Length: 95
Image 1 (cartoon, rainbow, N blue to C red):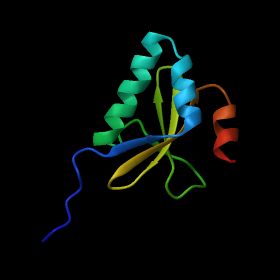
Image 2: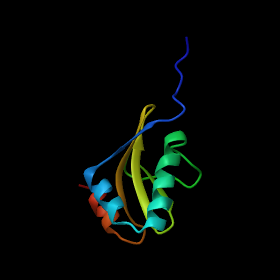
Image 3: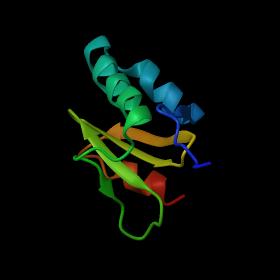
Image 4: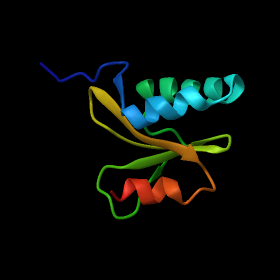
């Protein structure tokens, strides 16, 4: 019997991601949420980039926001969501 990958992974977000999402205006919330939802089915879309210096962290951009995440066969862990041009996204990633 072969191991099958589920069609859609669960999404796990940190409290800081949840809090950040609550601050977004409706249009931007919809953009970011749609991207998060899409990562369930395809955690490595064409626009994702593997982060240098990490074995399992990826970055995806949507509009003016950046998403940093990891994933396995069952879960996509959303670690950070922040402004694309804000170096704070990477400073928070190194903690």
